[in-house]
Image 1 (cartoon, rainbow, N blue to C red):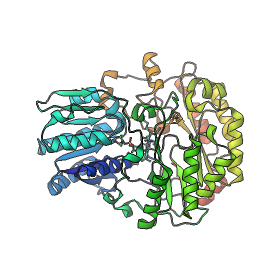
Image 2 (cartoon, helix red, strand yellow; image 1 turned 180 degrees about the vertical axis):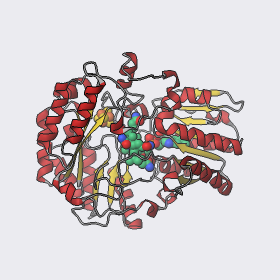
Image 3 (cartoon, rainbow, N blue to C red; image 1 turned 90 degrees about the horizontal axis):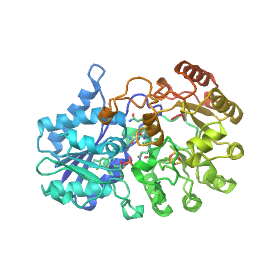
Length: 483
Ligand code: B12
Ligand code: SF4
């Protein structure tokens, strides 16, 4: 059966100079092929939109045109975040208005968390994959092709509308894909990679390679920790599930040999926590004589780093290291945030020093505005930024993402600033992507004005090192390596 997969558009305030191919849809596409289905990808981020039209209307039109041309038996839409949901719904409604019987399936963080309300309230949505989606995607294709939705009955972690239009839920099961090697590599052939190539002349490029794009690559899923602001576990469960080093590097090598791609961005929730795994990948890259550069979207867990691991990663091509520290105050890091952030201060400075020795581009990432924050804790973050002297420093205003302990705390203790209708949260109308522009919750001992004073103070702190200033700005006005 033909399946049209649509990657929802990314909001304008993503600060990365790149948009990358949607790994979510490329991986489920590869699985669909295992069962003889024929997926096609429409990434809305690569659709050119004329200046004088409404962006969303244009995307909807592109989807409808693609459906006319391709005639799929199912449409699958990726809805990564809460803020994507209103558009996803609008697109699904438009599809149903023209093609009443064409099943529309979705997956991603927001529909995973709010699947019950969505399947109950949105007749335009026929099925939702809860969390990891490969097996569910295959089952959906098989059931919709055979026009027999009862086939979805035995599948775990899925919500769907049955043949009579009634909502059905097969609850989250713990049957995650244990061995990720059991599934095929992402269907890279579905994307026209040059659509993602941009000017990278301003990127930190010590190996002087031709960086066409930062290629997303996944070597593991899930994380064993439970930091209070993070929703990783609600998608992929707790723990760590691995692909073999051979499979990861085969994929990287294939992309290099076919497309000349040499710069990779690991999307793993927590890349370095298993020493054997990360060393295996690095050894494999070096052993094959591949000259790559890489970074990791979510940074590296500092606790698991030492001189050996960092040395091996640098040899294999690590050029850019994010330090996901979140807080400069010891108690905030270790007791309040907890999980993977239980880091003694000495470890932070030790890793920073090793990064310095290897001349890596570094970016320290912090969050301000936790309920427990005070003037003193925020001052500690300020001082840490000054002492660490990283190339890029970001202090994000806290976003209480649904599916986190922090969100539950804010709801239970009524910490939200402004009116909040929790009953309507599933609609995704609350914009939770606003970066530094909004404070959603009020700390116990700081008022909103005080938060804004700190915001201004952090914005004024020297964000970029001399080296980054010299590298210059990318096309979109952002500094070269900033995400
Ligand atoms: C790459 C990435 C991006 C890229 C996305 C590029 C792209 N085209 O996909 C960019 C840089 C644009 C990006 C931006 C942002 N991101 Co981001 N991003 C990621 C990252 C690192 C990897 C995503 C990925 O590819 N995962 C691998 C795939 C295989 O997994 P998956 O996406 O979950 O897909 C599976 C299932 O969801 C399901 N599925 C998904 N879609 C569908 C559809 C159907 C039909 C079916 C059946 C199944 C299905 O099946 C898939 C396979 O199992 C994740 C962290 C992570 N590890 O997932 C963060 C993450 C998703 N991002 C996050 C955030 C916060 C953001 C930003 C808001 C950052 C910012 N402050 O600006 C922006 C907002 C983007 C927007 N929509 O406006 C958070 C979300 C937190 C939350 N709870 O909501 C995450 C979890 C990182 C984190 N730990 O904090 N991001
Ligand atoms: S270590 Fe990272 S991925 Fe794991 S729970 Fe903490 S923030 Fe989330």
